[in-house]
Image: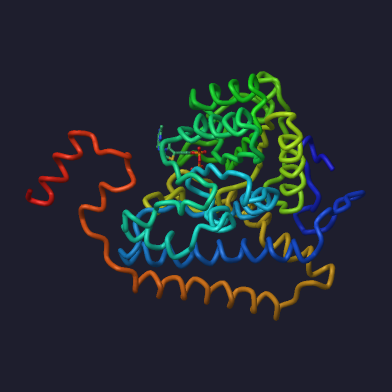
Amino acid sequence: MPENGVYQVLDPSGRLREGAKPVLDDEFVLEGLRWMLLSRAFDSKATALQRQGRFGVFSPVIGQEASVVGSAMAFEPRTDWLVPQYRELPAYLMWGFPLVKHILNLSGNPVAGRIPDDLKMLPTQVSLAAQLPHAVGLAWGLQIQGKEGVVVTYFGEGSSSEGDFHESCNLAGVTGAPIVFFLQNNQWAISTPRSFQSAARYFADRAAGYGFPGRVVDGNDLLAVYEVTKEAVDRARRGEGPTLIESITYRMSFHNTTDNPSRYQDPKDLEEARARDPIERIEAYLRERGMWSDEKAKEYRAVAAQEIEDALVEAQQAPRPEPAQIFENVFAELTPRQAAQRRELLGE
Ligand SMILES: Cc1ncc(C[n+]2csc(CCOP(=O)(O)OP(=O)(O)O)c2C)c(N)n1
């Protein structure tokens, strides 16, 4: 159901758009909503802990939960690779990264960020778009080795102005690598608005220049995001190459905990975005189908809060890291300069 070229299944009030037939069964949608609620609850708790000085800087997902969860649901974490940016917490969890490790990492534990060897995901990437060449290399490597698996890489519309984006899409197009480029257009790159990022009508239109399809989806519509991503995953699995998905959403909170959007954001925009809240939309849809109620909403929120509480307690009991562990998991072998720094730290 394209709405001005933007694929939608649900309208902002959660009603099925005319002619739309959802492909996800209710249990699967409920599971998606569970992840979305966990993500929202974690962002709120983590913000409080950051303000108390217990967590370091982080970027919340608030407003983008359908975009992250709906897309992640279309992959198979046992065979597919996740190459994230830094605003996709529910996807890390869906791939199996433990919440307790995420908490430890936010608390400054340098060892906790190590990705367990059995998970097919790369660490978060703060240097914008630097994950994209790695993602393409990974996908091309799978293709060359004849291994199963599709790669998904997440990035923002701001990151798509980096040269790495162009080079990665170009190489992926030429090689036909099994990859889904998932661009989250949340309208902001810190304080830079979308209009300053590109004169193109849609970021997804750029895909034509690389020789593969681009799709535009309402990123606040869980069902639409899932469908569009699933199609792209299926294409890649069939060996038909990459897809660029532009998921149109809105960053409903600060860029990260050091940012104050009231200095540059029109409050009306935020108000409008709140009326399109992805969680309320999918709750309304499920309610209409008799699958959601005030009691269920309370129950799911309580379960999410408990899961976070349990992970926080477990994190508190974890052994404190040793200062020299900051040198671990950076390079296989320390550079001479790092080795010297390590000796200095240890007083050797
Ligand atoms: C190469 C590089 N340049 C600049 C920055 C500083 N920076 C961090 S986040 C950010 C905005 C990113 O916007 P976008 O890609 O749209 O993702 P979002 O944070 O909105 O999810 C910038 C400019 C950086 N981290 N890396």
